[in-house]
Figure 1 (cartoon, rainbow, N blue to C red):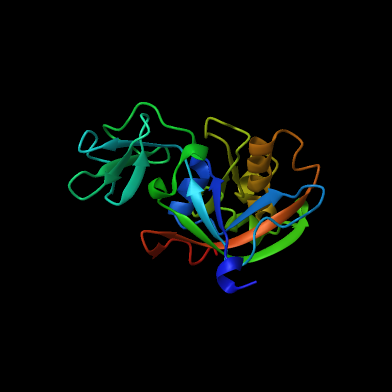
Figure 2 (figure 1 turned 120 degrees about the vertical axis):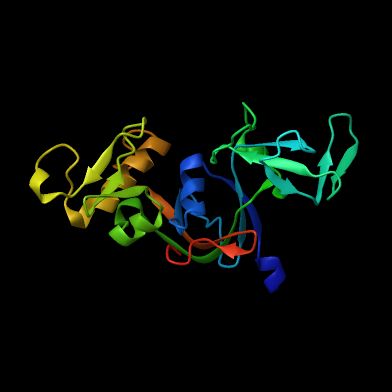
Length: 227
């Protein structure tokens, strides 16, 4: 197989939380549960087009959108329209504050390549059990974090309203939210995984494909550290 044939293109949907992590440069890994045959869906060199909730409009109807000037767009009547510098498309994303943007977004799996703003270049692929995740892996998965009075706090995704945090203040040991420093990233990832895949998904410890990648947007590498 030639190098060109071996480099495949994939589309993969990401929710707003993961898209924000990609844009912030926090995310350099993702995990997918493998099926019974355990065939690897990705290989080094593959390109993954990030699909997210989106909306697009012609012209300056919503001027705060990302401008796309080179896209071929099928129309409902069967015709094809061509975006250009004189007739651009403005694309909006749910994972972005959109003042004056659209009230509704289209599903991520309907996003065409021309509307995507992030691409992932696969740099490594491995197989392992979900619970083999290390602290470094969990951090590279892009968990949201903050610093409270010089102490790390990482999101607890079991609280969907965004108010849940794990912390490691020594003066709060034994209180709700306290996690030992050596486990804080894994604690966060565990709640994120269960929020995405359902309660008990972490405990089932499935076999997963672990993908390392470089994230690029408009020619700029986003995640040099996380990758």
